[in-house]
Image (cartoon, rainbow, N blue to C red; front, side, top):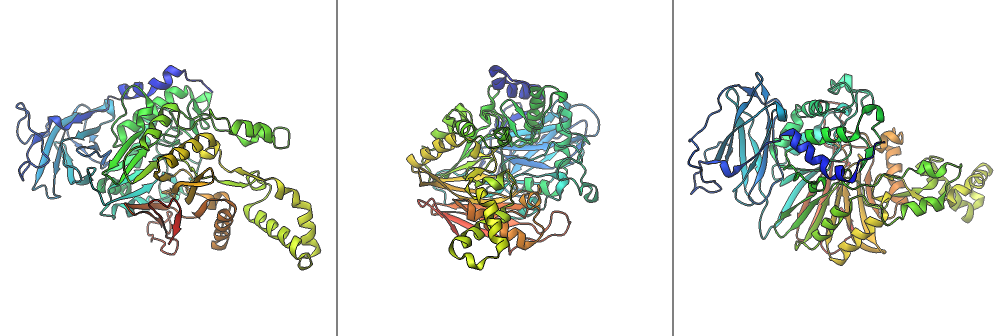
Length: 591
């Protein structure tokens, strides 16, 4: 694996952004054309002609429109044009306070070209706080769909409402969850916690139905080059349900690993080999495409850590978006290394896993996060990728000596053998005797890629939240399953965690071979029974999470889709779950 020097770690994103020529047009150059006493308008510079019109080469909007990274007085507006011929394309952006554009706010005429893959971003400034706006783009030959966006509120704020999503695998199935999100008319934002795309080539992961669904990936290879990543984003953004979600509300996004390669960390990734060339070059290409195709303000051009950013929803909540993948993460531990001699080397594992220098965030980002806890809002919300809850399972299960259900059966038989051995058959008693050592092995984290692989840093963060008296809500994705955890530090409540299911990537139902509703229910009961702090899980369905926060409580509504393999689907009301936490309580309540 290639090692990246400390200097290049801090500069490779700068190179990516400089090479991409990503355009961010400041709304300070917008032409004012607002009614209602110019509410939310920007004064027009003297050189700006009224009512500009796109000229020259035309183009169409096959990839939709989007907005993102809202601030109190600005928001990013995004589109991508498919050109009718090569060259610079003029694009007109219009913003209004109503969908009919009878109350216009501003217009901006600018251009894009192949250097940035014909994508375009406008940082629309001088807007009113807490307002909803409508926007559209035009070329000389076509007008885009109309999008809706919002700015952040200021001051007293009663409520904020988010859709929380992650893990959209194009080949695995349809993006129905995005379509459902587009129907929710009162969202403040969609929080996308990563794996917006997957880098795999055909036939590698969750693609067994791709041909039947007509969802084979483009390009037909694993993503390595800049053009590879651009092509995959373009394919995703042609999906009509994803387009509808983007057009309906602003997205606040952060990457996970598959925006680059599986199980990425600071200096490499599990899914990268020397035969694929330089990891630094692959990473740079992936980040350039991300900056071009996502509705985010590009980070400053000096440090990848700048992807971390916060969004204040008035006095209600402070949302901190974190990178747990690329900037600072130490390499994941691999349990197989501690079984090299045939038995588990507990001493070596304990020394490594408890190393206080191990970091998921990196020192700079961690220090930034700790300062966020002093923000004077009712709630502190962390938008990040991997589970923070302690997810320990029996060693015999983690090492695949027994399934979860078989371990639960063994534990029940062992209890009965102690209390009422006469009720067991000789075969059952012998089974308990033969396998009793497996019950004595303790527990291990089932996923070293999550916060369980970095417990010292997790403890530091949770203790800081306790000391700041924060109402801490941690959001996570990554696992493709829904979870709800009580978080503790030093055996005292420290916050709660809500983790969303995936848009389409398969979850534990596939890995555990759960074929029936009974098997699913047994697995869910086993997990919540074995894992302290875990209050809820859904291991079988795809969907999203609706998060509603007031000063009194934070409520997570887990929404699930009947099928991602069929065009026709319904919401699974019998699997929906609402879970809440009261301000000041730090303990989940099941509804």
